[in-house]
Length: 190
Image (cartoon, rainbow, N blue to C red; front, side):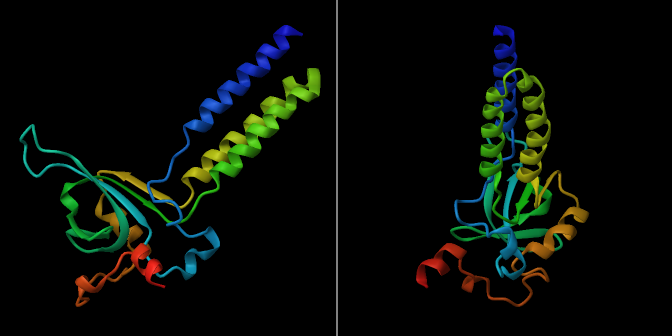
């Protein structure tokens, strides 16, 4: 019986380690809408980009920017956090766009709880624990990357495919960019 419990505890530890590896969100808490509210959301998704330095100097810093995806134009993207950032696409080395709030915590809780409850199955736990893990871990992992668009060294095809999730998918054109307010400031004033 001792070997049986060792196997169960080992599988439980492995499942916890795998669940920890799920993708986290860069967006602030309560920024992203619920999945069912995405079609009615007039704001852009949360985009996080990493940029390379403009020069080859060793002291230049790589930068990470995150904010509301305002627009994508030919050579630049616009994102809004505390102010509006205009970032040249040629400098962007990584990009992640998130559209909605994920339920990974709830999914992970179900998998962890169900896995723990297999201890009550006695010898059948050898069968039921792997079933919980085989079904649960892919579910949590799939939930963590759902509606998330990532790319290293983003191409023009990538920008074209995600620009529909910007606040201004058609580009900024003649829009007065100084009048654009971050979502948090708009929510605070209402």
